[in-house]
Image (cartoon, rainbow, N blue to C red; front, top):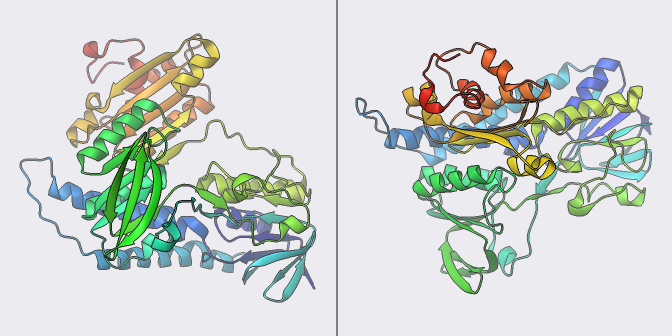
Length: 466
């Protein structure tokens, strides 16, 4: 039985961050990966391929609906070539950002295969046995299959298998109004599919400010996406090589015939294959491994990080957790993660990004709220590019005027949000943001303008106000 100082199970963001940190300490480390190719969700079936497809779909859509009268564009799309180009990008990044990195980690041994615990300090991978005093579980997540009559028999796509399509479906029904469902809805709608999105909750993106959810819904509907919220899926059946979906809302029902169905109704932690139930590692609802504030499982020498421990399901958070888990395991540093002010983004067009507290949360805590909303039409850079959809919504402390929450709907929300994140982390006031000189004209000026409107009426503000 081969011995290591640390065994990391999972080759995605959390696993790689853990392996890189372990290598820097000189710890002899085994990195085991099975299922999704090395690199995990983000590079293979998550951030990289979806954001690439979103970018192409955005350019194609914008070319067909170009806002500048002085310039006319023509565009056509080759779906097969698009998916090939996506695969080439994924393969390149997997090679350069993961496989090549492994070659530069002398203390890390990489092994392909599914790992399974045979005791609290031993695993088996393809017939070989390995042992270590510490383990980190970083096996990620996969699509949650919801119980709908006939769904499995009719067949459906997941966020992984939809990326394997070679032909653009004429019609697509998406189950789930979260980030994954919304991004794929816009990708395929803009490329030419007739898209229907169904959401059980009363609004899409339920974690965000309601005004953002409602505005995004209207923008997507304007593009032709059929969004049905507050509905229940009753059944799915095959009909003439298509799929007939029956949905219900209150006491009425509706049938929708589509070529393909995408299931995007959340994820489950990939913990079932590890054998951890046999050694006492506690697993909670949805297959997510339970950890304490130091990322320890119920077995103290076994840690867990990334999607397998549940939300927030973000690549950057997974990497941070992987790094901290190693530090806590090997050095006993007792590090924790402050999850309160981590920014999130959804890459629809316009994008959604948020950080900090929401209006309702602040009001519930303090009985009042100082909030302001600024339309992107007030941001000169957005006007120049004719990308004025959306707004920025800011929540500040009613006594100290410190920025508590920022919620953005804009074409570049994911870029703008970082200034807001830093402001909240550092406890900055609206006065300190206003006092900071920004580059003009930029989208990030939206944060400054939002801060300014707490002191100035919008109709009395020019581009040059301090």
